[in-house]
Length: 97
Image 1 (spheres, helix red, strand yellow):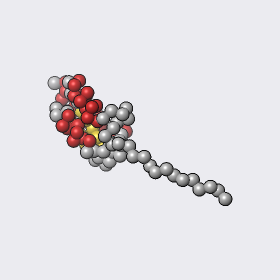
Image 2 (spheres, rainbow, N blue to C red):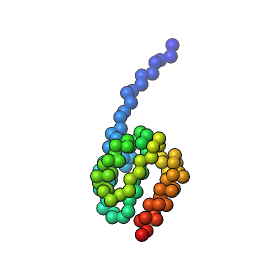
Image 3 (spheres, one colour):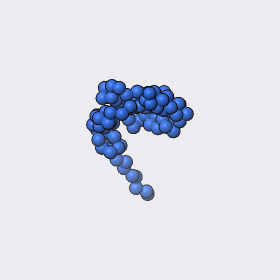
Image 4 (tube, rainbow, N blue to C red):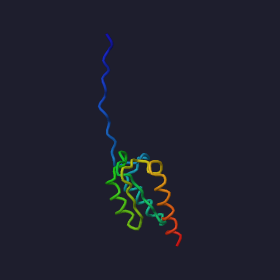
């Protein structure tokens, strides 16, 4: 009779950590120190970095442009490529003036 495999419980990643292991706040602080125009895009269906992290970005980057894509996951550059391209063109045009 085959041996039943025991599954270990799923590990929960801390949603406040990015892949490099830095806290989101630390990363946002570093970005704000650069002093360049910043555009933050997020997907409201992002399961890796939930969209409530956009509020942290809003607080840490008060002069940044922010955009939340509806029905979009973690990769708006792929999922909403055309919309993102238009958003970037407008952002770059506004930043150049």
